Image 1 (cartoon, helix red, strand yellow):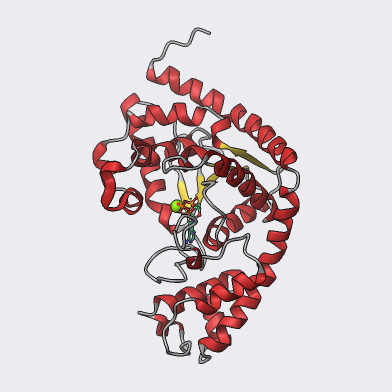
Image 2 (cartoon, helix red, strand yellow):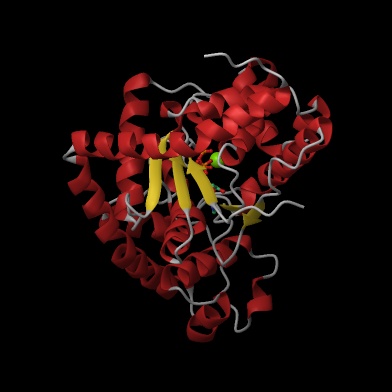
Length: 338
Ligand code: ATP
Ligand code: MG
């Protein structure tokens, strides 16, 4: 098997505001991988965002705000390549080729489409259905080998591997790598504060279900105070969280924010009532998130600078993706004569 240089790629949709799950499950890991000295490419996936309706002015704002969040969380536009997807047309072009590689049967098994389209699948966009094939293109346009994501994206990264394998097999090449999902730590699936069976999401209609990175200290404290729990105190041992999804979720959030294990949280707080644990969690959340939201606000005061960073990042991204797409066209048999 051809060996590929390690390269990290991941992306987040510019829909609404970044929420705590995105930060703990994704961006915090993005920063760690950048600082481990790996080649890192982080995208704002605006083409994915429009698979459900986005008001154009809101989309522009969310794109710049997500760029500000990336920077405020510790991504560095020199060390990492930061850009928005629509500025690098190779994503959409490779996405089309992958639409012709991907089988309908594979797409029909994708749980995100079922969750997002709900009962009204007939009215969902074709783009929402094809989303995983574009995501494979996002990753493989860079021959990325590692993709840090939350648990909910595992199925999509597995599909990316299937698409790469089928392309390689159909054309008799070893051109696309077998990408590894990187899903680690206590925060790979942060749950809604209102419903322990549903993941926290930017696009959940209930704002109380999540903590946004733009929330102020009072709002954060209030949302944690009102978070759904059960009447029992925290257990004395980790296995006591079995069957208590809301309690487990708050313990996981605490662990991820404090950079400790859930076992350590239980060792420190086991036996306490939520009346005590929730204010401790709120204080920790504010301590960790307030500097990020302040820095985001500062960066958002200079939108031209954010756009400059994204433009520069897109140029660097295109330098990698262009030759990979050109080679893909050659493999597929497209005539390139200009
Ligand atoms: P949307 O509701 O618009 O889909 P989202 O909150 O699910 O928004 P995405 O842009 O789809 O955010 O995902 C960005 C990244 O954040 C992905 O790596 C995803 O796995 C991760 N992520 C999303 N929600 C959570 C969560 N609740 N816990 C941990 N990671 C999450
Ligand atoms: Mg999502």
